[in-house]
Image (tube, rainbow over all chains, first blue to last red; front, side):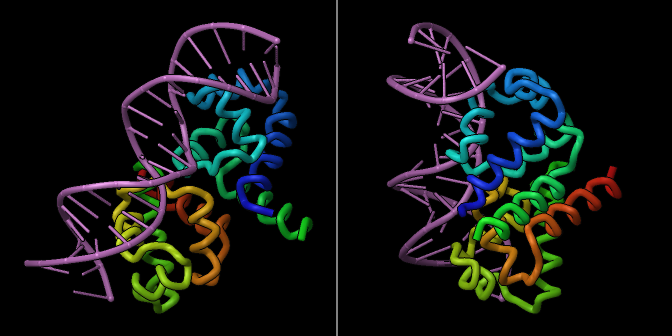
Length: 77
Length: 77
DNA sequence: ATGTAGACTCATGTCGACA
DNA sequence: ATGTCGACATGAGTCTACA
């Protein structure tokens, strides 16, 4: 499982846990709304710049997001 | 301090700890040698695709690399 | 062994609109 | 509220070469 796909699933899960819509998250992270959609579906490989933008509104950290991404990949192999 | 700059410093530190040259790391991570140079100097914002490639040869994990990046930023603000 | 440069490809990320 | 599309610009990442 490619990192982008695993990351997308983690992103979606974290967003829902935070009770945010894609729209709300995009606003808070200062990125495009449809770009959140692309990321969640694993179609783009996020840069650390955007990763750091996303973490705060999700009330988590970039490292925690990647930690979960790694775990998901392990489970899925 | 921007995330790319902090990440660059962490990358360089981890590479030296692993006893690798930029050249060796690039070969093992299957990326360009001068791109490692760009990353270490904080001139580019690495994607998670490359981040996952770098972690293994450095004998660490992507999340650990970002954890250290976050710590460095905190210390520097 | 590293920094830098130019020229290049193609993916990332933006913006507006519509189902 | 989300997926998708098209057009766009910017930036990531490659490759070769030289100080």
